[in-house]
Amino acid sequence: MRDDELGGAVLQRFYDYRHRGVLQLADVIAAASSAEPLLVVRVSERLAHAGLIEWKTSKSMTAVGGIGRITALGVDVVEGHREPPIMLLLRDRGVVGGAATAARTGSLPVATVPGRIDQALAAIDRTSSPPAEKAAAKTLIRQLAANALAWSALGTLFSFTG
Image: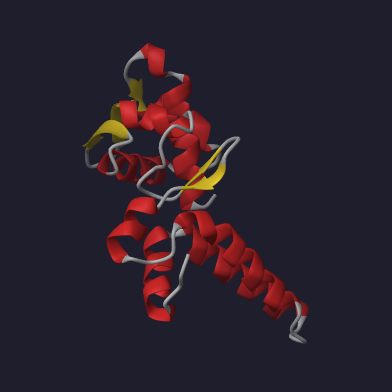
C-alpha cells in the first residue's frame, strides 16, 4: 500500500470513529489491512505533523504503540470542505492534497496533477519500448505523483504551470 493510500485509510479510520474519542494503535491498524504497525505509526506521525490528527507514539525496546484522535482540520478534509496539506488518497475523493506544498514552492497546483499524470502515462504507452519497461516507467511516474515533495521538486525543475 502506498503512503498516500495508507494515510487516507488511517485518516478515514479516525474519522469513522471520531465519536469514540481516542483511538489506540490497534484500532488504527484495522484500517491499514496488511501494513506493519511501525508503518502505521509513521503515517500517523505524518498526519499529526500535518495537523490532521493528534497523535502520541509510545515506543519500548520490544513494542510500539500510540493513541490519537482526529482534529477539526482532519474532519474538514475527509468531508471535502478543505484540501489536506499533504497528498492523500481518500475514499470517494481520490488523490487530494499537497496544495500547501505547491503554494510554498510555486510549483504545479495539485488539482492539475491527475491530468499531467494521465498525459505522462499516455506518452509512455505510445513508445515502442517493451511492455515490462513501460510498466516500470508507469510505476515510477505514479510513485512520484503520490509524493507531494517529489512532485513539487519536479515542478520546480521543469517549470510546470497550472
